[in-house]
Image 1 (cartoon, helix red, strand yellow):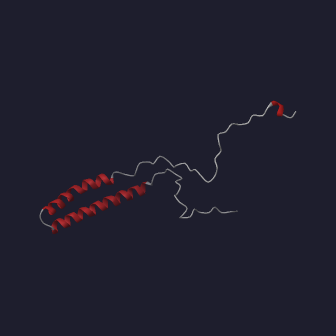
Image 2 (cartoon, rainbow, N blue to C red; image 1 turned 90 degrees about the horizontal axis):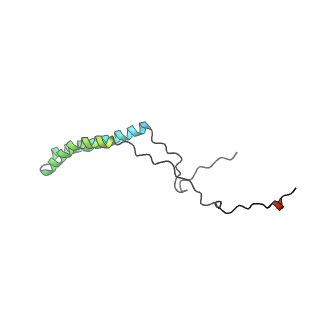
Image 3 (cartoon, rainbow, N blue to C red; image 1 turned 120 degrees about the vertical axis):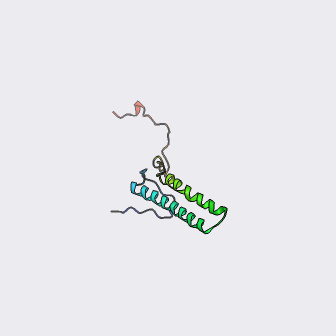
Length: 112
């Protein structure tokens, strides 16, 4: 029995075979990562606000107070919308059937 070969890495673009969304656990993990990244930036803003002076300090303090709202909105944005299903696969290396006229046999061509 012949085994199907796997497509090579340099064979071109991949073909999407499903329009399934990401799993719920992957979606939650992505939201958590986005939220943690925003909170890390907020922590850095607080630390830099302590170490700086002048207008930069106040800018960092404002950013530290605004970032939690932005982090919640971004984290709750969820997964991307459904792409609408896989694209059609067309193999251009093979000729397609035409839409030419179909020959109808005459009555005289029948063998009785």
